[in-house]
Image (cartoon, rainbow, N blue to C red; front, side):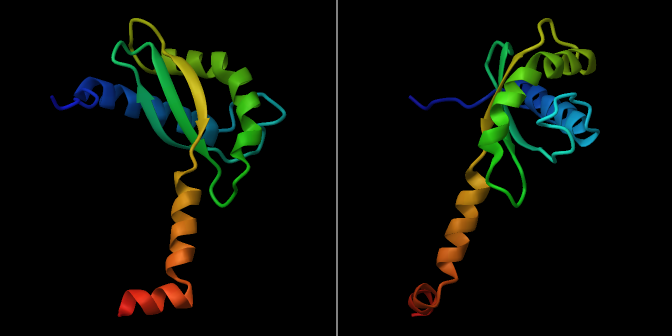
Length: 125
């Protein structure tokens, strides 16, 4: 039996949450000294089937220290949840959990490996 992915509604709500959070971070609306003036990118949001829990994947472009910001993001989660609740009409505002998105760093490592002379030579053969 094939595992089904997220529903269209889950995908739509997750994308709306991503946009709201990106806007909040872009406007530097979070009043936490550790997050002030820091560019945070929301790369993806995954939401549970009941729309009550959202996992928010965040990164800092060009930096690999987003892990250090996770405690501050957890402290800011109630404020951010309120921003989501005001922007999106849902029965219950989802609980937000922040996770460091390491996929960009991994992709950069793979790219660096593929461009090494000995690997490039092997790929041309």
